Length: 175
Image (cartoon, rainbow, N blue to C red; front, side):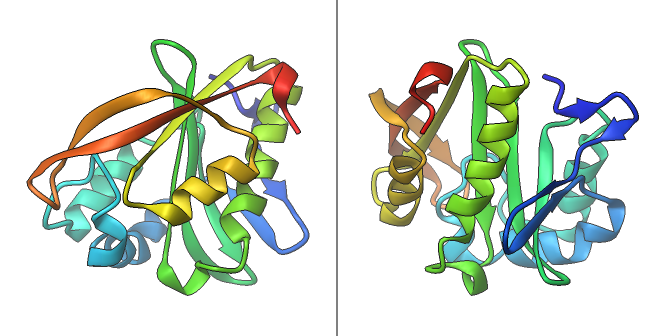
């Protein structure tokens, strides 16, 4: 997936946020944020416990053609939002530090990233949330995603499989 301009990575701006490419300097706050139990319990892929070395490894995988963005409010990075290639469409995922919860920031960031993706030719975007994560369910509903079935994913933090509501959004349904 290419979310980049011809001259390099894209930076997206909204009324309150900047979505910029990640940098190695982000490792400290990423490690601190992902290691919070209230964040990590809703994430599928991060190792548990999550350490600084894990953040470095994550950032090392975010090359120039990555669809991963840091969500920044003012000068403070608050989370990660990503749109990456999947088998059946682009996979949309995100997490945010609890300091950013409850203010519509993730929905705002999602609108910016999805809008850019659909404007640049992407057709289908998939996502999902653990069924016990109502905040994420609200974000995806506000963005126009529709239910597309159920799945189970292993959550390393919880040490068990957790039910996941899968959702999809097609370019022609974009709000």
